[in-house]
Length: 272
Length: 361
Image 1 (cartoon, each protein chain N blue to C red):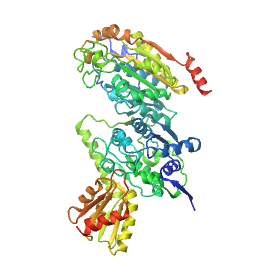
Image 2: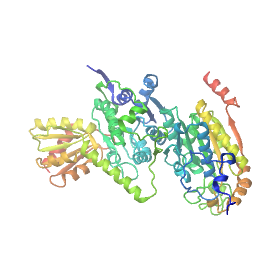
Image 3: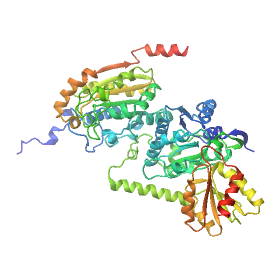
Image 4: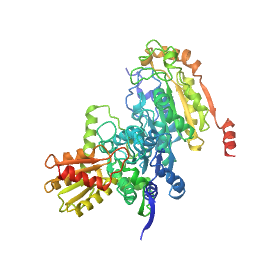
């Protein structure tokens, strides 16, 4: 037994390849298997740690599965009414502009009940970060149809699949927001492969960095899975998302003000 | 001698906000209170005190901006009129549930629905019984003069921060629109985060420091046992308000046999009615609740032993009269006189009502 490896022999600084960020708490997760929320929470927490802004960052949690986001990321939080997170973030940021303020919202919260608050916060160019988890379903209430639910996708309130006649089309809210001069950075990401996780983290980091530059709203959509709501295994969910959601919600940067000058041109023109 | 001006009630709300060190105003236009935001935009307080003024996309948004600003530990306020305040009911409930200080001004107009833009006091129930879902109370101040529009902004903030609870100035289109002499308050500087912490405690979401737990501004508690504890804490706070912060004014009540109870502009008119009744040899008095919640229940109870009856005078179908009846508990008659639809009662009508309902009845 003397040759058995002891755990202390393995856990050495030179062997370390990964460490959980201290900005994530040790609370057990309430999210389901295969859910994207945990990964995105981790990315937000890592960005906060790497930018060293834990004392200066305030999160706004939504109504939905992520209502309890404040249990996992170790910062000060506000818990907003359903859909109102961008208004809550606006109120905070306007009276405390030195802070980093982000909202973390699902598709029902952001693109249905909170459409007005979302559009107007972005249109005013509030210097906040909006993280938008789009999993095409209402997770917390048990899998009802969302504004972003795909055509033909079955949910508990569209059991025969989303029907254009009855429910209209899935809402491409991110494309709508990218049209607004107040939006500084609009991107659509996913976290279903290690490569995508890395890209998504870069996007979140850029969004937070933008906050300090006062150039407008930064908006990061994460096309996500909801295995419980979709009634699929995590593996099936990833495949379904790739095959059904990515063609309609293509990944990539929709707008980057540092790169695009069209809006600046528009603003200058309007000023004259 | 202070700064004495002739000003409109709504304008005074704006001026008082700047002077008392308010950090932010978030609002949406609606008659008859739009002068509040208009005055602020003309005054440009962000250049003078750093106070933020923002026109929101809706009352729903402005009350949630209030939630955000209050979470930062800042003195924030909004104003609206009846239909707009209905839209704010959700946000006010969240602010009360999360125990945040904030000031809401309701310059009432007639309802229900879009109703009328003329003055009314028909939101008494909404203001004093919570006004949103769940068991909660607002601190409700009812000014009856332009001077009190000035004074109650600062008082409203003081009480809101004392209890970490939303406070409401419940006024009406008359007080909001009329001009009167007013002595404006002295300027008070806006508080820093440290000053707020020293004065009102370390509770706000000002950014998590290493030496403390994270501050979470939330009204959510999924465990029933913990939610009930939270409810009990709120109720204890309301009890404390009832013990420490009831405010009222009594006019000619010492030897009165008949007491009129009225708030806001109805109290101004009722005061004239008391004078006419006295001239007629009728010993009338006026009790004017200044805090509609907490209500002056004890004072009415005390008067009950030595008067022949009460009459509530309101610009609605009879709302505060229910609280008077609860206070009197059937010992003497409690009558009601009111006008609705934006009609302002005349002193003569009130005198007639006292004579026919209370004395003759």
